[in-house]
Length: 282
Ligand code: A3P
Image 1: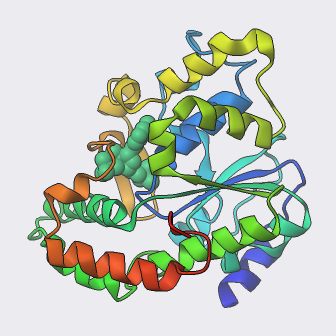
Image 2: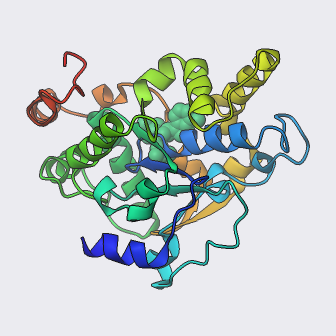
């Protein structure tokens, strides 16, 4: 509640704003890349020499709107940004500035299998620990905290449910994607994203959809110079852009989690998501 009041005081949404919302390690980098390159496809066609991804990563193109609040305890001046403003947030739905929904702006949420999110968070956290001279954490230790809901931006299940319910209540305003489905059919998701934000691909743009999907694919982005040598200023400090690209696959958790831990997470997920429509079986 306090978070919402602070956010309300410092940010007034515009109807044309588009907000990417995710938990860390759910596909934020990917959806930012898709959204930015879709919305700006006319000024920055894929392949143009001045395309921003040639020099900076997607996190520089779409920033977290609460970033300066966390890092400098400062109210960011977002009024100068031209329309359409593209933002990202890891905040739970209940903590969003109320004007985001009231103004009618669009929210694009991506969720991912909690087991893959956990493994990705564990690996990312250890990069910081190793750089800081700390011992890496075991995946089982991080899994214990994850199951107890002790994770950045709140418990996984509450975060996903918050945006899922918002999607059910306001489908025209909240788009809900799953990382696994994006991996299966990125082109369909690129098209749905473009339609949702009011920039559908026309029949003459078939090539543009493919080009954007390829530009934003894991295999392409991992090879970009901005990924190999660039940095992003994150809340937790400077991050090598390459840290945002690890495996980029579905079900890598099978290589890291014990069967007991996987079962424990699945049981919590079934318990928390039963009857919500979020489970594949309903
Ligand atoms: P893994 O650690 O499982 O490989 P975020 O962007 O929210 O920080 O999430 C990072 C996760 O998304 C990492 O998952 C990363 O490899 C994956 N990822 C990053 N860019 C991607 C892309 N273009 N396509 C698919 N997955 C991507």
